Length: 171
Ligand SMILES: CC(C)(COP(=O)(O)OP(=O)(O)OC[C@H]1O[C@@H](n2cnc3c(N)ncnc32)[C@H](O)[C@@H]1OP(=O)(O)O)[C@@H](O)C(=O)NCCC(=O)NCCS
Picture 1 (cartoon, helix red, strand yellow):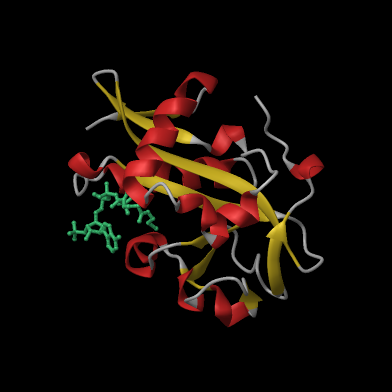
Picture 2 (cartoon, rainbow, N blue to C red):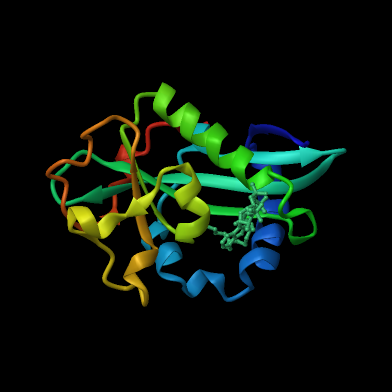
């Protein structure tokens, strides 16, 4: 099993290449990318999976705003090298990142992703809270997870990027 470590500045080009292979080079047009435009990731919550010097997986988090509530985390992208899928790397990345997020006091996470994969970690449809991302073709892909029970009670509205000053974990 690869090791998981915090992403560093040197990882950028390899992560971009991995994301191109996982999502395609047209990935920047996706709603989740547009949502993150202009933001810096929450660096302490960005991890890579590595084995024998090869970068095999990536997960990043960002801060977004829903209505007038405090900013919450946006998980994504998460990707594993296609040649190394289904070996538990994706799960390890998600569990590591969510564990760190909870330990740092974050209370909720939203994600645009595959319900059958992220559902394994407790994510469910964000529509139950009235949380929306109108640019999504399939609203069922907008998911949410409470890290602290009740954290999303009363949190409702459109997901927008948080102000850059909210990103609190710069390297
Ligand atoms: C989704 C992804 C990160 C999972 O990584 P992984 O290392 O294969 O994950 P794990 O080995 O921990 O878990 C694999 C399980 O997730 C399931 N899974 C993987 N990708 C899936 C997908 N796109 N849709 C549904 N289920 C998926 C597999 O069926 C597998 O279940 P199984 O073992 O019962 O067959 C990886 O497949 C990937 O990079 N996909 C392309 C990018 C992507 O779609 N990312 C967003 C996902 S929210």
